[in-house]
Amino acid sequence: MQADPMGMHDWHSEAYVEEWIGDWDSEERRATLRRIAHLIPRDPDDEFRVLDIGGGWGPVTRVVLEAYPRARVTLQDFSLPMLDEARRRLQERGDAVTFTQSDLMSPKWTANLGGPFDAVVSSLAIHNVRFPDRIRDIYAEVFPLVAPGGCFLNLDQIAAGELAGRAGRHAQQMAARQELFEQTGQWKSLGELPTGSGRRGPMHAHGPTAEADLQRIAGHEPATLSNQLRWLREAGFDEVDCFVRDGRSGLLGAFRAG
Image (tube, rainbow, N blue to C red):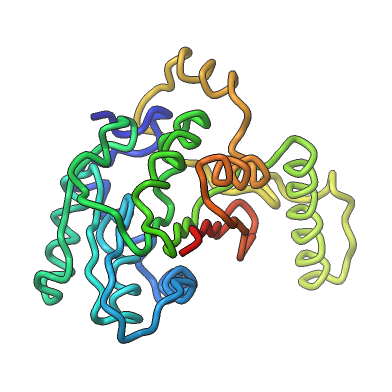
């Protein structure tokens, strides 16, 4: 199993996984993840089954079980260091959580999950396969895992189209310009802003990206919001929506009729 086709993440490294968890395990992040749990259309006292795709060290599973204490969760991931950390952090939940290792890059990732599930959830996982055609296929593979009346909730990165991406970058620069004015009392032109204003910091890099992988990504329609919503409808879901859109992230919901 490969760590990341783009060479950005090394999910097989215990040291890298520990660093990653430290960057993302915060109360602010947990508050964001609760949005996923609260969208599951079940009573807090219900017993039902949940699949956490790319569940990592268990942050989504934890907020789901806090909201629905009688739920039972299958946490899927392909990183052994992540799964080991999840077992440690969720051990007090006993047999309410089961763990399974499989690779989203393979269509066989669903083989040992034992669905269907009343809810399938995921956060910051599926985009890591990088290939838009593979993301589309994963959505099709998720659909039969969702029981009638169930849902699929995915909080993840969303690609921007060319024009929307340009507008988003412009908005970041305008916000940086406003912040600089509030600090100094002077308006600057966009060209006068400090280098890097409105841009994210450099991403991790653990290896090169193969030219064939870049060509594969370029050869398929991007994983924009409109495309991902369409892929979910094409997978068979009866209703799809975007509940939250914040910069490069979005919380997508897909629902099956009962």
